Amino acid sequence: MKRSLPLDFEPRAVCARCKRPELVCYCAHLTSIPTRTRVVLLQHPREEDMAIGTAHMASLCLPNSELHVGVRFDGSPALERALSDPERPAALLYPGEGAIDVLADPPKGPITLVVVDGTWWQARKLVRTNATLAALPRYAFAAPTPSEYRIRKEPDVAYVSTIEALVHVLGVLEGDPERLEELLTPFRAMIDKQIAFATTLRGARVRHGKGPSPQKRPPIPRALSEHPARVVCVTGEANAWPYRDKDLRTSHREELVHWMAHRPATGETLDLILRPRNPLAPSTAPHIDLTDDALEQGASLEELFARWSAFVREDDVICSWGHYPVGIFERTGGTLPKTRIDLRQVARVLMKGRVGTMDAVLEKLAIGASSPIGSLGRGRAGVRAAQLARIVSHLARSAETPPAAPAAS
Image (cartoon, rainbow, N blue to C red; front, side, top):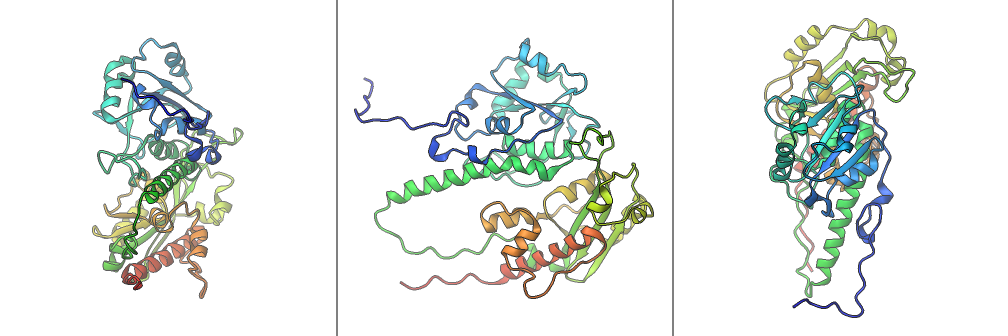
């Protein structure tokens, strides 16, 4: 027997755009992000009605994308049309034998990136069922940072949501990781709203308070305070031709031209400018605050790797702001220790939201208010290295400070 609804029942108002209840709509946070990469999202039908799925969200932010729902795509006119652009050869983002690490070895030109959306079981079924997909060249990647998907548990800490995967991969394909970070703005807003809404509902059902919870120590990596001599702050600058300016767009990939490393515990600093291997983009020198002459007289990659090898140790802890400096160094052929800390991600957790630039974080935490931060080397990289070192020092002190005991009631 079917259960009847009460006479005064009113269905929840749902946003027609994001398909979320209006109470948790994230449309105000959507940003249009043009890309030269064409993105084709193939979604398993069971994911279509998932309220907290991210493929639909990504399609709303990426004007050069399309979303198709189904299981069998072989012979689909829409898919054939999407994969038929000779100037953007198709590739499948899917791990497995023969897959190329897209973060370490990205394609030289624009591509059509095919992304399957669903659980791992559903994704495997989509690839197995469609010979067209199985035959495509494959790209894969290892997520440089853990997933922020706090409302949906991933089967493994290395797994990320569809929209997070696109942030990592498109950041490399477009040569502009910071711009692609905007994809995460509606994602984070959705998560924050969902958690706040759920917390409010749970709180409404609590009859008796349990008293104040003991204050927990902030989630600061212990290596910053326990092994200070191993901490190395790194930042890198690139010679990057603009992708959005058709008159200046070239086939040259971005290349590392300035590498800064600083060990706060000892004051050791490696400041090395590299000679560009490609023509110098007009905006590179002023953007990174160096002169054309300084860049043209820079060192070779061989000298960089030799001096880096003498500077770094295998058990060092590499600290960077975001994963861009680490990524471009490894794509250049450099080797880094395995232990790494993304200080921007640490700041996000501590400040419970988006943090913006290092300047914004320094101002919000009042770091440098009493004494100017200055610079540790040449150009913008020297300033950034000094900022990183100051943030590391602040976090290390915070990690050492015991949490305050809750006040007696």
